[in-house]
Image (cartoon, rainbow, N blue to C red; front, side, top):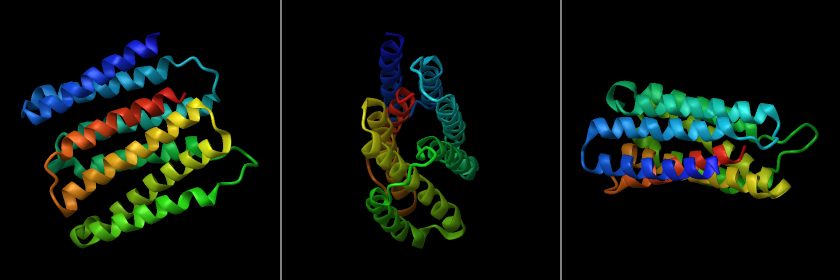
Length: 210
């Protein structure tokens, strides 16, 4: 019941964040954006389902790094690189959480569509990246690996919680892809609504996978 109530609060706060951003209410936007992620972290903290402790720890670490990235990206002209580094760290924690257990092989077939997507995305962005070409390449590699591992984990094991993690990983990939395309390739009118409208559900789904 607590998770349901918190999830409803998260969706309301996420909607408020999107609305305040569209209306240019920067102070409300910053507060509600940080609050939304703080509530997502709370969902992960109170989860009582018996999962491997390491999984919960890694997911919490990823969520905390994401919150730091959110704060940094509120001031993109100054801290964009710091935000990128924070989200890269978040993806590394998610990769460690989603990787197969001992003795279970990685499903390479599940990586193919994500590798193709990541390659195409980097090819589109590369001409505009300048000195950020290597960091963005590493970031794209990390997020596609994260999504591929989540997909393989779900296909291999099935179940609601693995599906939640997989759906969250895919939504995260969509959110970051739109952000990168809007920033480096071509402006998209409703970009922020798409980015935030997929980002917050992505993090919530990953938190609920605990």
